[in-house]
Length: 111
Length: 117
Image 1 (tube, one colour):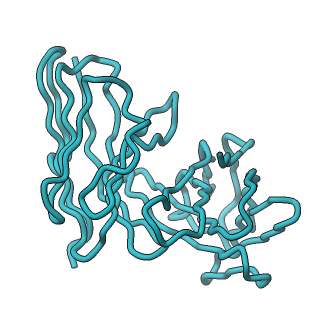
Image 2 (tube, rainbow over the protein chains, first blue to last red):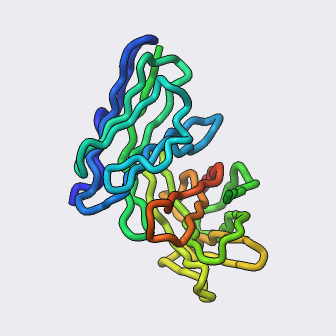
């Protein structure tokens, strides 16, 4: 198994642009999590899905952020419009039983 | 709500020595899991070790072991025979034992461990 796949690995964009981060979970894992990591705030859970349904989006910072999981094999996190303070590493993780597996992360830089 | 506290921001250890990383947590749950994750400079999050709260025996994985004190809500990680490749950030994490939809990880802020040659 290839593990959790995230794309792109690096993204540099300008303030105001739309950014879409993608995640392909491990096959058979029914829960998917999006995290954001910054030096100031550490690891923050943004949103998670169970069986493609959003369960808790209380960590989503504001309306500029949205996440979807149209099917069991794909999820997106979108930021529109992006701002410099959104610069961070974004992780996708999936869960099997009681263990989470993380993707390699997307390093986002908003200029 | 659960909280996880890692009060030491960073530590340093000599290669081949033993180091212990501290973690405390707060919860009203009786059944839960505790984890230590490693994040090397590559930033990949790697599961190091897991402990089930109902188990009295401390978990071990090769050079890594934990000291789980349920009553004190303490969960420390001991790394024996430290190696240069152990240099990383280490996160302590908590998860309720729940097979339903609400099993999410709560992380501490992490500790940066440096292994000196």
